[in-house]
Length: 383
Image: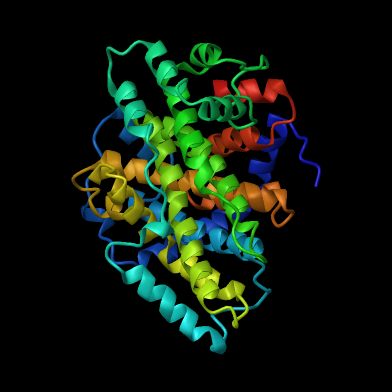
């Protein structure tokens, strides 16, 4: 598929998708109305930013979240199915693999979760977060911390020059340049991404590309979540990026758990459907468990496991953060499906609009993922 199109082309695709989006939105609203949610009784989150975020669509916030979560679940299942090699029309684990499913669920129920299924918190991350949260810390302090690890430094520079993080046409060739171009916040985001990247190692034979696809979605979701947070909760931009990274650890751990059970019973050939079932059903909860093991703040854990929506009456900001995270994940998922020719740009635009993602926000993220030239890239960051 030819991915070279301009921002004007993206805008046109969004307009063309409008009628389809309206129909999809009506269907999502009907589905959301069946949920046990009392939207009328919930007051809108306070503050001008929250009021603007609620005004950019015509459905209640919690209905929008229900539609967003439903579309994200469906699109993610489609992407994981392709990554794992699940056959079209196949659903559920084969009869001969019930023991594998039972063993995987037993491993999932273990408390604490076995250490081999989740990565340890990167050693430098607490120092990085402390430097970022210290208003009196000079910008060079963060660069000095990163400079302790040459491998981390190299990975950060690669990310800084990649399509999703690059901010200008001039290459970033040093940490000092990264500080100037990206700022302290941007450099911290790059560092967090580089620290998490090594845990996405290849899997076993037959499914070795799943961690790679998951990592690709993770990096795109991190970038998209930041752009969505700019729109709905600007003060939470870095938090949204970090949440997208943490969220990907859940499906990865679920994949490893199933892989481990098949390794223990080599006479049973791995079934992609078993991997998919465990990832779909337990990926979100696992992400929250791993975040807890990493001593992540409770507020962020609530966003990961979907509790923020239930607590919207008391914390509208957390609800908006959850919306930014899931919207970022949806846009990243749709982007990968479009890359594989599974969806057209118009279809992606329609699905995003139906999930409550405003057209200008979709166009901005889409241009960042599929920009044709530096002008489009610059326009994306101005938007």
